[in-house]
Length: 424
Image: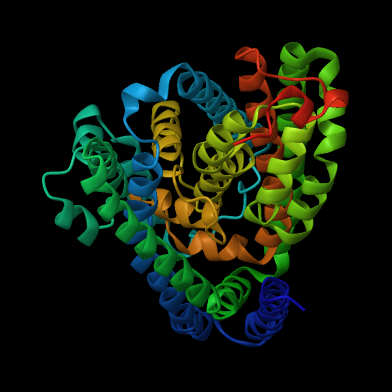
């Protein structure tokens, strides 16, 4: 069994064990002991969450700088990069807005009331989010010190600094390549650390589930059922939107594209890894007729900037957690959250449970209890299967659409070599 599969088994086992222990406490203890038990057992979750928070700042900085710097001189990116970014931004906004619409329509977290024991705390949290003014937003966006931003995990400030740093590094030419190479190595080290940290996920799940069931009983599973069902509706809706737009642009070529990418989609779905299908997806897109230079440019860029399934999930999850804690987010705050997610989700492709890392950072920024992230961990693997496949579909469509816009989409039956595409 692969390590990712074992981790899922361990998380599910931790969920069941924590649920059993929590139920025993819930049914056989008085209110005072239940409260004490919940506080103490949640320390396990706190350890896991702090380990995740520990790697957020270096992870975002290193991956985003490398992603931007590898584009080279931004003036030479030209119309291909512009068209690609037009698709990426449009698809990202559509995904985020769809997630926000559905989570407000279905309200999967409503009624759970995880903070029922501390109504004043919820009221205080809700008040802080509702008073998120323009001045507060500017202060959250623009850092006065990168070290202060990293120390406080001000993720959006880190993103702004990383963008400037990445552009400046790219402008340095050969000298900048040394920095890019070093940060690329750092990003791989951080990604390895992510794998280590995720091994503590079952411990965090055990503590979170035991605490919440000891306090609330088994009604937490009603939340899981609603959460996954509504998320699935969201993913199906996003596929419909993407395929419809793809058909409008590609027309009769769309069925052929879907036929070519069916195997990468299956692999991505079963492994929950879009990186695992990158070589195969590259090969299939070139066979479909996309020019190799466009594939080589747009597809890697899409892996950092075009995560349609993940972006829909991040909006859905963040607001659902707020609902579970009884925190009311007004429309202005939710739109601000969309902007934050739009920026903070860039450059972390290939990170295990990347969506949860971003959701955790976003919840912290908007004063939503981060413990809610641990609560959705037990079913995150199943959500991850669908959002990873959606990411692959979105990037395949993006590459094909940009090829069509550039007039570089060859016929499938001719093959790449006959078209003069496959050469160096």
